[in-house]
Length: 451
Image 1 (cartoon, rainbow, N blue to C red):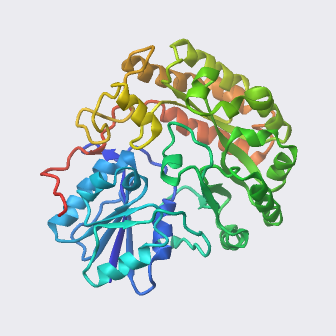
Image 2 (image 1 turned 60 degrees about the horizontal axis):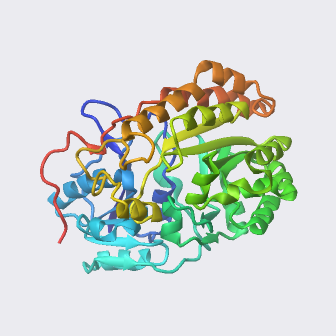
Image 3 (image 1 turned 90 degrees about the horizontal axis):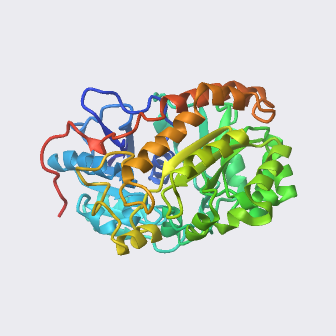
């Protein structure tokens, strides 16, 4: 049996290379390859960096779909459907919008694939694919072994992506992760992760634990960090801010090789934080105390901020950028609120009649970074322009150099050297994605649907 795994891009303009020239390995593709029986011949294509050979013989195509890549995924599926090749789709969007995805795939995986993938492969082998393969409960991550051999010959950033846990126990209104996993987290056995890192540590200079929240269970996280210490690796990950108030945790974070954490500050306005169910961000002295604790242990911070909640006004942008510069964040993201389907946020805005598109991810009028809903205190156009302006100010050369000479940001030669490279890439990317198409604009013909 021959299996083709495809990682779709967001979209493409005719005659132009993909929007980004720097890409990280798509770990879900390697995870799926690792779950596939060894007698299945696997080919992998990354739509972001290579042309998909649609005429190459294959028996089954697997595509992991995110909301932003849904339209492109459906175009790819149509190309294979023309050739009589069945397509299976999974990923977050398949769990959020199963009926929509089912119109474009012979089979749909909802939930986590680990428990149902062997059955699906066997069914495909015998020509008896079912329409849905539903995993409704959380699965064990024991024995998970991503097959990174599928990445050979492709030029990705030299960062090793590792999954230590999956999901988060918080219930943030806008978050698709809590919707799909029902605000729960599962973790891989520590020995499994250490074995994976031992193989990879001489190949990668930096590791990114892709966990939705590596600190979702503090005690388990501490045990994990203790096990990391002897490896002597450098790593970064995503963390909730409540962990920044635990002194033992911060000490283990530093000793285990952590170089920085992504923290969702989201908003400086406590009214917004309450509406998004993130009031815990203000606990025990709030952001200022949490950042002081992180600085003491020389942990760099990638701060993310969301604009468009009901208490936001145009003044919020300048205040937020000033905060990010004052605290010398290593990097920062200033994004508009996005209502992902299936989330409590999407349902609320739909009930309030504030969604501007029925399904923005498929609407021909929508393009990347457009605002798909009506904000309360500004126009959609003002929200978009102010987000771009915030990025432009934070990634101005003056800001980059000032933050670059911050004591924490320059406390490690490896991270200081890469500070300017990373900030330079973000500077180039400030408005690069604005109005970028979802789906390939040059793709022609009707979108073929599945039976």
